[in-house]
Image 1 (cartoon, rainbow, N blue to C red):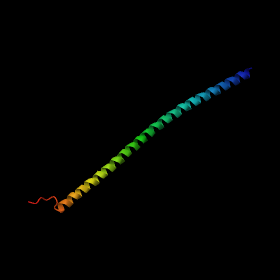
Image 2 (image 1 turned 120 degrees about the vertical axis):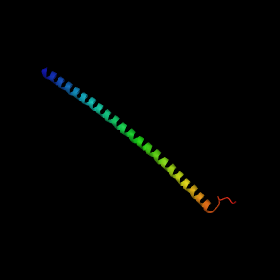
Image 3 (image 1 turned 90 degrees about the horizontal axis):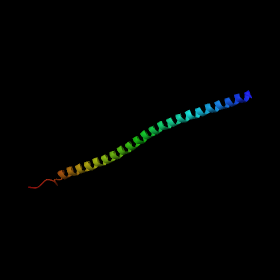
Image 4 (image 1 turned 90 degrees about the vertical axis):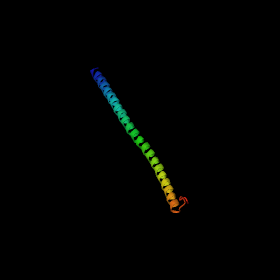
Length: 87
């Protein structure tokens, strides 16, 4: 009878220890996943900002090219005397 009680106590304490281990491990995994989600959100934010910057850069470069073309047209017009009024 004593051996059965010892076996039951041993099994119960093993089960309890295993349960505590699972609970602690689950909390640790949950914490690590939350930290990973924070990092992923920061990374995604960086990607979005980079995309916006690249888009703005392309628009700005196009505007600069248009301004250069307009300036060259003005230079050609002055050199051809198209803009000089005859008196």
